[in-house]
Amino acid sequence: MIRRDFLWSGAAVALLAGTAAALRIGRPQDAHAAETFEVTKTEAEWRAILSDAAFNVLRKEGTEYPGTSPLLNEHRKGIFACAGCHLPLYSSETKFDSGTGWPSFWQEIPNAVGMTVDRSLGMTRTEVHCRRCGGHLGHVFDDGPPPTGLRHCINGVALTFKPATA
Image 1: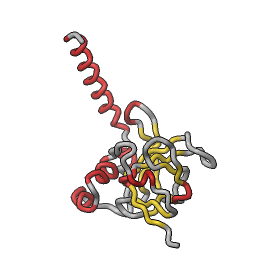
Image 2 (image 1 turned 60 degrees about the vertical axis):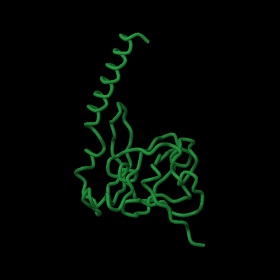
Image 3 (image 1 turned 90 degrees about the horizontal axis):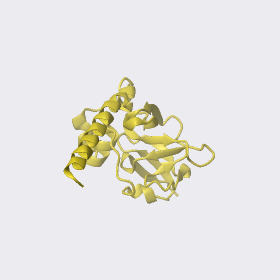
Image 4 (image 1 turned 135 degrees about the horizontal axis):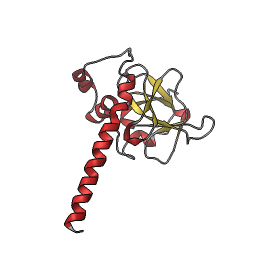
């Protein structure tokens, strides 16, 4: 690569990064920032009870690396709950292997999640958050299995799992 190509590549990357930052104006955080949640804590209180990875996802709308969550391969019967406030969110009965590297569900437990429009990264998606604490969970897409056709693509660090009792 000649120097000119290298400089142009660097300028293009900087332009794309600036554009992505500008597009974050319509973030889901902005959309549900006005919502009132039953469970509220200061940033310090959240940091004290969450792992760094869970804090990054739940409170800063981060994303875990695909394939890294132990819950991806959790196949026992039970309930997946919010790692922040422990609200039951998904039943193991609705979990499926989407091949994406994140735990996926075709339906949430009724009255468990909230959804907002996420226009970050130059696309429009549906962001999913915990209805009780507002923690970011992931996104919903319309390429899931029957009966809903939905795929709730959820960060495993945003969840805990409680096995069903026999």
